[in-house]
Image 1 (cartoon, rainbow, N blue to C red):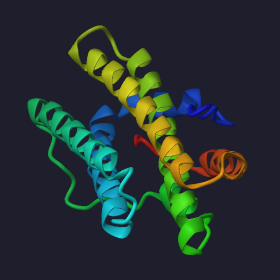
Image 2: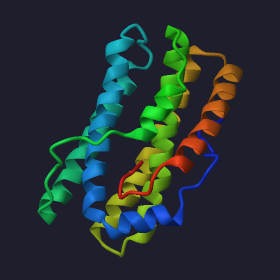
Image 3: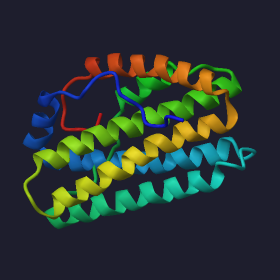
Image 4: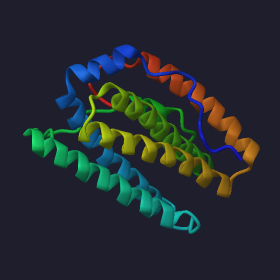
Length: 194
């Protein structure tokens, strides 16, 4: 059973150039993304407490994302970078949420698949950051993150397959993957994960 998503669009060289030109801002945004990812995993636990099969993995994912936040924050501290006072609106995630269906079961599936797409995109972009950085601890850190985010991308597809028919999951994932590519192409360039 295939859990890894093949994204329909690649991030651009212009995106990684923008990140590398303002890495301090990227670190601030990255920290915020890790905080939000931890909260997102826990929101599944809060909204779907009857989905007992996936709660332990959701908790583990939330803890791991919070550990990533701690690690990014430590890097920021070492560079004298503060957390921003306000978390910027994430148009990428907002636009993905807009394509989620509204019925309880449909929304549950779509939100799991959305999480998978966001994590898979994060893995792709962390790989690009890793490849652009010079040798050293920061490069090693982004290599570890790349592997972790790729795993998270697979976890959420697997969770969906616990509750929904395989063909239904993959058909919907294909639709959402196509939409994600269009959303990505429309994003303005900025030193941010999305």
